[in-house]
Image 1 (cartoon, rainbow, N blue to C red):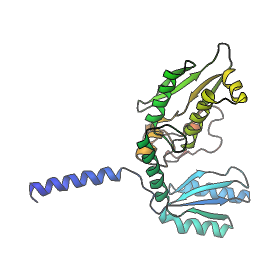
Image 2: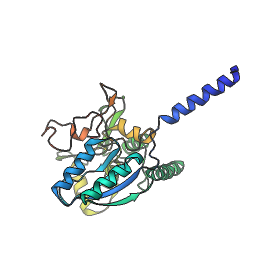
Image 3: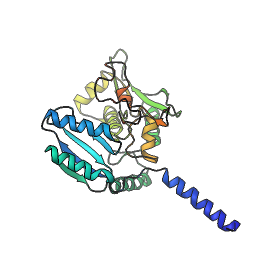
Image 4: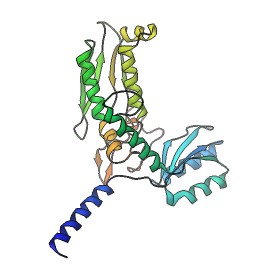
Length: 269
């Protein structure tokens, strides 16, 4: 192989390597599953623990609850056969998850070109932090806060909203699970309402409490969902055995590991 061809081959390998770093979900299907007995819940829990090829976006906690489950292509037959044999009701929600992810990303990129901050599409971590800084410069009631640094050295940025001294405080956070983008969007929407709404009830709670608001308390994970893996749920702290991240919503001392947790480091929980 000549030097020119070798150089082209090297660039091709680099390009393929970079592309391979982004998780894709081509032909992954999304199902809604309805439990009707404790046995159903047990079967679903066993599925969740059995393989990383079943991704539970929502997990039913009690009989009658629905679970939303992403299933890898090579597990489709096992998944449907298991549910059919157990008589568990299920419905297909999405034939190809990657198509939905691509559509979502296209909308976000289109929105980004307009350069506005709103609540019709999701925002990156950088855009949310810039908006918080903007609030701090525009409103005398807003103080920008630094809640610390993440493992990857990102700021855990928030604000304090205070209209007068002596108020009791309310703490509001979002984004603890990285892939649940609706949470930071909800928190920033509430924050905007506290500052701009003319509704008397909103003005009452806005001005008679001090609000400590942190839209993204898992910034590493949130950033990872935009750049690498849309379904990433945990933090990005590395652990032994090539394992990354802990579920921050299962990582409190209070009632440690009683429900919805796993001893497998690779588990989302």
